[in-house]
Length: 119
Picture 1 (cartoon, rainbow, N blue to C red):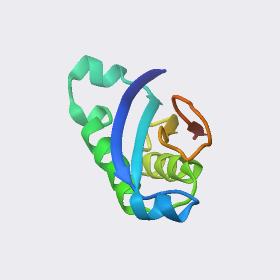
Picture 2 (cartoon, rainbow, N blue to C red):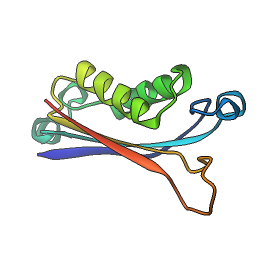
Picture 3 (cartoon, helix red, strand yellow):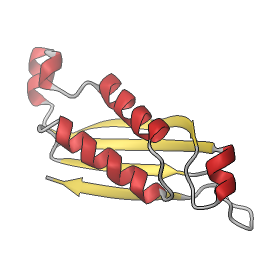
Picture 4 (tube, helix red, strand yellow):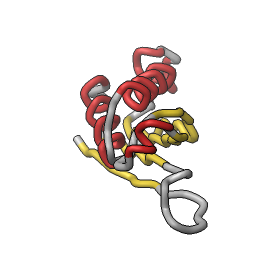
């Protein structure tokens, strides 16, 4: 199978368990990999034979910016659910949500979760 990957989509939103996170907000970074056949799109150059990654970006943006969740696991789950629903040609979707400024009492580069959904 082939892949379409959007990596490093960055959004500012108000998710988290702590009240300060919900009030002040922080950066969230989303990576998504969609596994599907791209052979027909490659042969024909017809956009309808693939997944429009600009639409996927807007879908991810809408979910991250308008949802109100406590856990980044929930964000990844919502993204996977909506992508699979909207694009039946996708066999599998893998979404990672990064929370680089998570309120952890120490130094770290990143906190992230990755969820996979298979049709």
